[in-house]
Structure formats: structure tokens, C-alpha cells
Image (cartoon, rainbow, N blue to C red; front, top):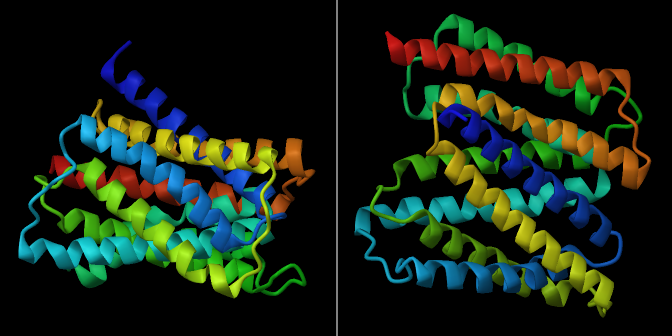
Length: 288
């Protein structure tokens, strides 16, 4: 197999890990409050990342003063997107919440143009507008199905943009495992801080097993994502990110009896098409 095929396989496995973790979280969210989920899942995630970071000898890292602000912004972005997306995920159809997140490439292109002053031509601007209409079709703002949880999914995208733009500003000398550990620790502490404001529910062994599965699947998703980005050509691998929609639809149908309607499918196709075109134009720009 070529590097591109390996990279696409790793990206697909990454999306499988993310979608599987989300499917578990949606189930657990029907039983446990969000703060408890973040805290208990975070303990295991931090423990596993701590071991991984130690084994890679990346536990103690010297961070330049100029880089601290970007690390803080990345943490804020990750904590914010976790809270808002999981809240939306628990209260929305699994596939719909996942599909809304797929406007991320478009949101990144828009934000890079506005905040980083990157050149975005009229073709990519057209793709951004087209993809935005795809989002509107998915969340159906004029229908009775629309609620503020749909807006929470969109707010989560804003926080992901903050996270990813901050990540781009981090120096390569700061290891990915170290950044992941700091982020996981921050999310866990956030869950702990919100615990007094929500009723504690004693988790069963089944729920603890499910929480353990979400932590492992989430870490696998992160690791396979990193590996995929370092294997083969990004322009070939990145489109396989959209496989998460397929996994989310299947999980929604099998476990939650959530069948996608025509508008959700149409909106997803518009989003994926706009995202793929944005990636294509970005590759063309690099080659010029």
C-alpha cells in the first residue's frame, strides 16, 4: 500500500474512533450529568496520556513565554468546544450534530482570511457561502425541530476554530502529546469545577465501562489523526475526514433509531462538497 492509502486508512480509523466515542457519550448523557462525564472520562484520559507522554519523554517541556498565550487559547478552544458540542450531541440527533461540525474547514478558511489575513479568492468564498446554506438546511432554523442546541453545535465550531488557529501558532518544538495532556487535564478540571452545580449520579459498572471506552476511543481518534497527517499527502487524506458522517448515521440508526431525513442528507452533501472544493483550491494555491 502507498503512503496515501495508509494515510487514508488512518484518517478513517480516526473518524471511527471519534464517532464511536460520541455514540457512547450520547448514551451516557442520558444517565449522567455532563460535568460528571467530563470529570470521570477525563481522569482516565489524563492517566493514559500521562503514561504516553512519559514514555515518549515529553512530560517536561520548556514553553517559550510568547507561546504560552497560544497554549492558553488552545485550551480555551478545546474546553469550549467539548462543553458545547457534547451538550448539543446529547440533545440532538447524532448524525445532525456531527454533520454541523463538518463546516469546520469552511469556518477555518473564513477565519484565516479575517484574522490571519490569508488570501481567500472568490471561489473559496463561494464555497463558504454554499456550505453555510448546507448548515442552515441541516439545523432547519425555521422549523419546529430547531432549538438552541443546534446553535450550541455552531458555537462549538467557533471554539474549534479558536483551537485550531491557536494550534497553528504553536511552535513545532512543543510535542503534540504534551499539548493533548494539558488539554485533557483542563477539560477534567472544568468538569470538576461544575460538579457542585449538577446532581451527582452514582455510575454503574456498565456506565464506567462505557466511560472507559469513550476515553480510549477518543485517544485513538486523536493519535490516528496525528499519524494520518504525517503519512502521505494532506490533499488526498483530508477528504476521508468526512467518513465520520457515515459512522454517525449508522450509529444513530442502529442504537438510537435516528433515521436521517432528506434535508439532513442534502445539507451534508452540500457541506462535504464545499469542504472538498475548499481543500482542492487550497492544494491548487500551494502548487502555484
